[in-house]
Image (cartoon, rainbow, N blue to C red; front, top):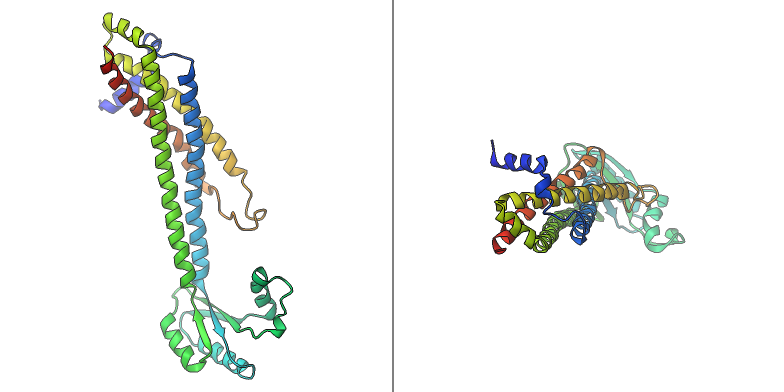
Length: 301
């Protein structure tokens, strides 16, 4: 049988005599359970943020990628002629499925967040905006710019590239920070469990010496600590994960958050992913406790 699975079977089998070596209560118990619960709670939020950031940026990027804007700046007498020229160019451009002129109300709605609702749009020399939507094949942006410069010198194509790139870059960095946070949470959990195991071993040094006198091997003693601390880590991580998932589920939705928290949280089968946190916490506790126990047992004479 594989040595790893042999250790797992020995871990789950239990041994009452060996388990007496590990204190069933005390600050090490509370520290292990609390640390596992707190780290699992934080891991749920880090995971939710990492996943939601990617979805949100992809949605924004896709929305911007499917649309573009043509801005026309021309004297009042030439505005209509250039608008008609741009519409004619767009109607004959492969890859452009739709082009429409934005109304004054739509342009006012775009400017309201910046200048307020009382903006006198009728008295301002605002450019005319035309929104175009591309089809699945897409269009040649550079070719379209050349055609517009020839047919309507006052028209400028904005394909939202400068908006998409920062979004994708920011999303990638946030996603990376989320995974780094999860890694740091795992390392912190291992460090705290190691400290708890060291304290428990040091507190039971006399009992360990007695067990050695009656023939107990270090592996037998270490197994008791590994079994007890892994169980505590599993319990704490399970509680922390459940609390974290409940907290994420209670976050305001898209409507109540005004779109700012759109997509934050887990979606669909994504709710299954946090359930892997307790087993991972148990895995970390298993190896951290085993390494700490074997090291400390070598130091105890």
